[in-house]
Amino acid sequence: MKKLLLIASLLVLAIAGSSRSTQDGSQDVFTPIGKYLQSGDYDKLSAWFADNLELDMLGAVNNCTRNQAKLIMKNFFSQYTPKKFTIIHKSGKAPMKYAVGSLNAGGERFRVILYVKTSDTSSHIEQLKVERE
Image 1 (cartoon, rainbow, N blue to C red):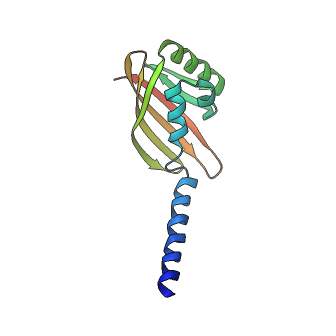
Image 2 (spheres, rainbow, N blue to C red; image 1 turned 90 degrees about the vertical axis):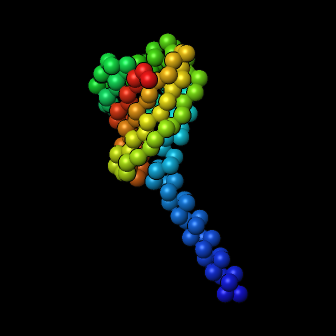
Image 3 (cartoon, one colour; image 1 turned 180 degrees about the vertical axis):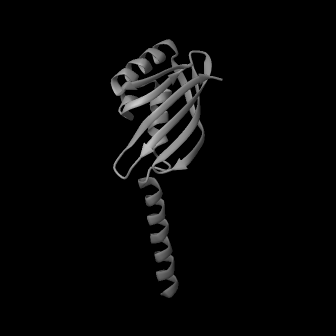
């Protein structure tokens, strides 16, 4: 009986630990963002944008609003149709996390760097940089 109670307690602790790691966004915040980058869904991607963010597209740096960044991403995706996006590296801790990814789009490869500000209630892209590899 004691062994069964011990196993049940360890199982509860393991489940609680895994749910805590996903609630703080440490593993999940870049999953939907990466999915929208891969599909070229600028509309859903823009929902992750901060009200004002820095967007560096192929060397053209813009401090812009969410709507302006949405239009810039729309133009980028229409010129370079995305095929595949892969996260290469993730790091940082709340309130600022970042990820580096590789985007295959329009027959070219791009390096994408994302800086995401996180809180208990939300996460927003503060900076997005796209450069040719």
